[in-house]
Amino acid sequence: MRTFFHVEDLGNLRDAVAEAIEVKKDRYAFQHLGKNKTLLMIFFNNSLRTRLSTQKAAMNLGMNVIVLDVNAGAWKLETERGVIMDGDKSEHLLEAIPVMGSYCDIIAVRSFAGLQDRDFDYAETIVGQFVKYSGKPVVAMETATVHPLQAFADLITIEESWKNSQLSALNSQLRPKVVLTWAPHCRALPQAVPNSFAQWMNAADVDFVITHPKGYELDPKFAGRARVEYDQRKAFEGAHFIYAKNWSNPGVTDPAAYGKITCDDRSWTVDTEHMSWTDNAKFMHCLPVRRGLIVTDDVIESPNSLVIPEAANREISAQVVLKRVLETL
Image 1 (tube, rainbow, N blue to C red):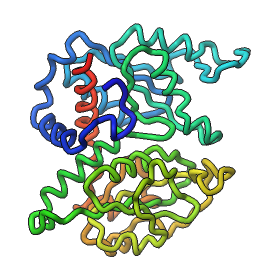
Image 2: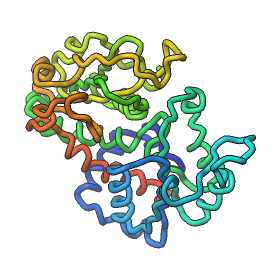
Image 3: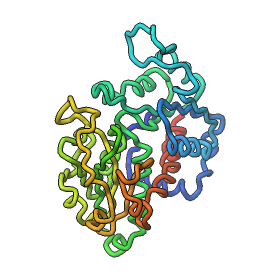
Image 4: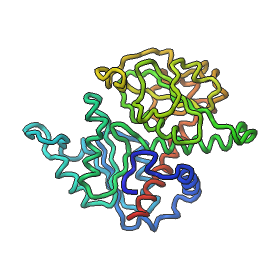
C-alpha cells in the first residue's frame, strides 16, 4: 500500500477490521517491521488525537518519528504553482517535499480545507503534491476532503460495540442502523470527517442513513448509496448508532455557498429527546466537540457514549495502516 486516503486503499474491509482486532490484542507484535524506519508527520493544522495516536502507533511498530509543525517551526510554505514569491512565504512545497522525503520512509500529512475555493480543496492540491514529489508512501492524517484514519477507527468501534450488543446476540443477521447527523456549529468546518464516514459506512455491512438540512448534501462520490433523510426524527427512528458532526455547506447544490454556514438551526443539536427516538443508540463523535451545540452534556456523558473508546481506536486504525505500508517497503 503506497497511499492511504480512501476505504478501497485497504482492500477487503472485513479483513482490515479483523486485523485491527488482532493488533489491538498485542500492539507490539510487529516492532520488527519498523526497525530503522522513520515516519515523518507533517501538520499544517492543529491536532490532538491524530498527532498522539499516529505517533503512538508508529512507536508500537518500532519506528522513529519526526514531527513537523509547518506553521510553528518551519519556513512558511507556498503551495501554488506559478506565483511570484515576494510575500511572507519563503519556501515552495516543490522544493520542501523532496527534501522531507529524503529524511524518512513514510510521510503522514494533515492539511485542512481552505473552504474558499471548492475546486482547489476537492482536487486535494496540497497532499497530491506530496504523493507526486516525495517519492515515499503517503498517509492522510486528514486532508481537505477526507479523514480516513478517523473513519477506520469509527468502523472498528461500531464493530466492537455491535458484536457485544444484545441485539446482535439475539439476531446475528440484523444489520446495525447507523445515522450520520448534521449538527449546528459556530464556525465553518470542512466536510472531511463526514465525507470519510459516509464512504466507509457505504462500504461496511450496515444500514446507513445521512440526515441534514436541505442544501447540505455531501458530494455524491462520498455520499454514494446512502439514504438521505431531511427529517432528523425519521432518520433517528430505530437507529443503533448516532454519529453527530457539523460540516459547512459542501456547495453541491449551490457552488457559491461552499464553505459557508447557511443553516444555524439549533433544533438539530443531539439531546436526550433526540436519542429517545432511537433504539437505545450509541452516541459517536470524532472530537473535539462543542458541547451545547453538537451534543448536550447528558448525552455525551451517558453510558451510551462511545466518544472515548472511539478516540482510543485511533491508535489502532493508524497502526494497521502503517503496518500495511511497512510490509510493502
